[in-house]
Length: 619
Image (cartoon, rainbow, N blue to C red; front, side):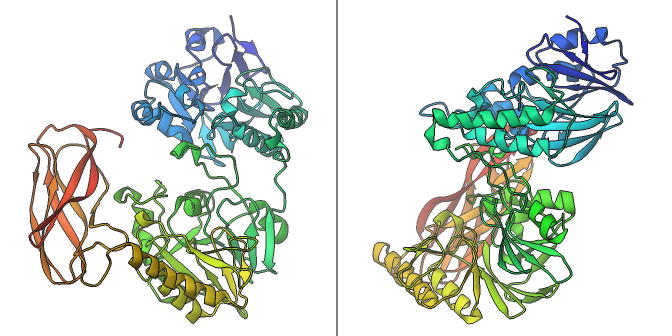
C-alpha cells in the first residue's frame, strides 16, 4: 500500500498499526507516530528526501511507538510527550514497578513499549518546538493516556492538528477501553471532553487522527464527540452532569481586585492582584482533571488554570510570582510549567527550599520529582515586600515540617495562608464557619511533625490576628468568633492524645511522635560508577540525657562504611555525614542501604535507609 496525499506537503500511510503521517517540511521530513514498521519499510515510496527524518509521537501506546527503535537506528530523531518519559525511556523499571496482583488499575500503561526509546527532545506542554523548519505547538489532550498530546502547525496555509487518538471521526473515539483508568469507570472520558474543548479553541482547519480519517470540519467533529460522550450517563448514571465546559472566567472573587480563587484547581490556588496589575499565585498545583488511581509521573500531569479568568478580568495572561506554602505535589506541580512559560518568580520560606530544589535527596510523601528553582528564599520570621504586599513566613510543623504560615498584609486586610495545616469538621466545608466546628489535625507522621506543633500554629496565627484565612483545600474565609478558641482546643488535643497513647514522658526513651531516629540524604543516590559516596542526614537522641552515638551504613559484603561517633545533648537532633564505598565495577539499581544507630550502649538498628544506583542511566 502506498502513501496517500492529504495535501501537497502531507501524506499518510494507513496500512500500519496506526496512521503514520509524513510532512515534507522545509528542513527535512517529519513523521507523526511510528507505527509497527510498515511505514518505515515503505518510506522510499514517499519520493521525498528522508535523509533528515524526525519522528514525533502523540502518546506511548505500542501500536503508535513500536517502530521508533528502528527509526532511531536508521538515523531519525525522536520526539515524545514529556509526561510519558517513564514509559518510553525506561520500560524495564516501569514493568518492574507495575502492580499485577490484586490490581484495580486499568490504565493502558501495560501497552507501553517493551524496548527503551532514546528520545532526542521531550515535547513540553503549551510550548512551540522548531522541528525541520516548522513551528509545532504542543496542546495537552489527555484522554486514552493522561499525558497524550496533539500537535498543531501551519502547512500549505492551513492549521493542521495531529491529534493521535483523541478523536477517530466526527462524534467517535476509536476505543473506549483506555478511558477506564481505574476499575469500572470512565474517568478518562472527562479528559477527552475537556481536551476537545481546548483543542477546538486552537481553531484547527484539519484534524488528522492516528486511528481514523482526516476531518475537515473540526469544530463540528469535536462538538459531536462531546455530545456523544454525555451518553455514557445512560449506562453509568454517576457520569450525569460530569461533562461541562470549562468556564472562560475561571476565577471566583473574594476581595475585589485583590484576592481570587481559581475555579479549576485541585488544591486551592489563590491569586493576589497588585495595584500595578501584577499577579502572585499562592501555590500552583493540579488543575481539576480526571486522575487515575495510581500515583506516577505520567498520571499527575499539570495544566494551566486561572489564566483565562486573569485575562478576562485583568488583561493578564501570565503569572508574575508564586509564593509556596509547602512542598506537596498538589501545591507545586504546576510551578515548573509556570517558570518555563512565563518566567514566574518563585518565593518560599527557607525551611523547605532544599526539598523543592533537591527532591531526590528526600523520601517524604507527596514529593514532586521535578526540581523547582527558588528565586527568593525568605528567612524564617523575616518580613519581605512584594509590590504592596507585606509577607512574613513562619515555619510550622504538623501536616508537614516542610511548610510555613504565610502572613500577608495589604490595604486593611491581614490574610494568613495555612497550607494544609488548619481544617475543621462539623460545618459546611473544611473551613471554619461556626463555634460548633472542631479542628481536625491534618497530621501525617512521615511528613515530619513535632509535639506542640499545633499549639505553635495556634499561637502564631493568633499573634498575627488575621482578618482572612486561606488554605490549600477550602475557599478563603473571613475570621469569625470562635475561630481562635477552636484552634487552641485542637492544639491541646493533639498533644494530649499523643501523650495518652505513646510513652512520650520526659523520662522515657523515644524518638518523638514521628518515631524516626534518623534520615539519610540523598535518599536516591545515583552515580555513574563505583566511588566514595558521601551521605548526610541527621540522627535524634532518644534519651533525656547527654549520650554518645555511633553510626554506620549497613551495605552488602565488600562495601565499606566509615563509623562515626558523635555527642548528642538531651533529645538533640544533630546533622551527620558519612562515606560509603562500593567495590570497583559495582552495578546496582535502587539497592537499599541502612543507617545503623547505637546510642549509649543500646543499638536501635537500621533507623533509616537510602537507595543506591550505580552504573545505570536511570534511577
